[in-house]
Image (cartoon, rainbow, N blue to C red; front, side):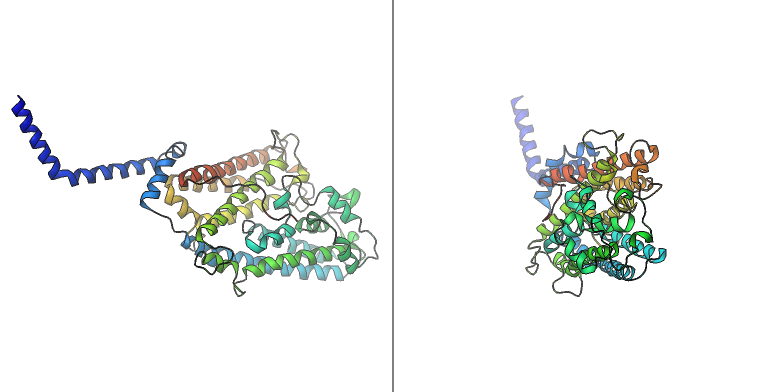
Amino acid sequence: MRQNNSVRSGRFGRFFRINKPILTAWIILSILLLSIFISCSHKNSASGAANTNGYLYQMFNSFDPRSLLQNLGNNIIPPLFANLETSRSTLVTATNTFASTSCSSGNLNAVQAAWIAHVRDLKKVEPFRFGTTLSSFSKMDPFLIDYLAEAPPSSGDLDDLDAFDDPSQDFLSAQTYIVGFDNDAKGIGAIEYLLFSRAGANRGTAPTCSDFANAPNGRSALLKALVTNYSVHAKNVTDAWKVSGTNPLGAQLATAGDGTSATFPTSGSALDAVFTGAVQLLTIMKDGKLEIPAGLSGGGNGSSPNTDRAEFRFSGQSFQSLIDNLSTFKAIYTGNGTGVGLKDYVKFYSPTLAGEIDAEIAELEIHLGNITPSVSPSDPSTAWGSSNTANFTAIKSSITDLSELLKILNTELAALTGSSPISGGPGGDGD
């Protein structure tokens, strides 16, 4: 019996020595197949597999973000800022024409249309508050900084604007008058107020030429002063991205890490800036542009909407702002058909999460499209709150979609990569 066991042991030992490479390859293949199976599982198990996937990534691969950064810096972002510059110039021209001539419904409509076109372009560059442009963005669109406290301009800011009521006050007087204002009273929202609302007791009612009867002085002069002030900061931003400029931000983003970019010393820091901007964009959309004005923040049920906290509440552009925001997030994520996008980065870590983001974006597009503006753009109360059943359902669904996107990007992906969650709160220089 012992002899037979010894013989069998010897045979097994010879078999193992002969076939050891095959067995080793089989073990490695089994590990790889297991990792693929885990990464393709449902999202609820994706977080559980995070350490495994992240460990295998660190062992066997590395993601080079340069292709993504090149696509963003060369193809996706610069055209958005070129559009912003074009609409900025149009807004200035339309305002100057309006403020220097007798008002007619036609030229009032023209400057309102120019403002709307420019705001649509502004919302499409919202996540790209990089480097030296951060301070200018804070002056252009203070809502990005203050949405947790108020929707600029606040009622007090509007009172200050209305106090410029002497019909003899000219453009220079208006420029002097607004010097001491804080950013909330001088940004894009303050311009919206003058263009889309009457003053004082009639606040919230659409203006007519009677509100600008003293052009070029009075309220017309104040409008021109606000647009002139805003335009300086907007041009600082668009110049920083101008392709023909000196060391434009797009080129710096595309060449991050090669030693020539002052703003992005490494490709990792550039990728972090893009990723953080995307997370902040989704957070502002969810918290500042939907939950707070809908009366759903802090445990609210929507029965008491905070309509004065809605972005662009006087022009009726609140929901279009969200659609424009999403179009840019989608371009960042997909690559916009011009090259690599953030999706390639997510897919590198987890194809499952990448697919889930695709699905959430598609759902969010549908739900945002189901929200209708107020019957009267200057009266947002008809668009917000639980009393508007159709809108309320679409708003809550949109919030759910945004929450899921943030969970995937900020929690599950962070777990996979072994990084810390990204703050989605206000960022920037509020001075």
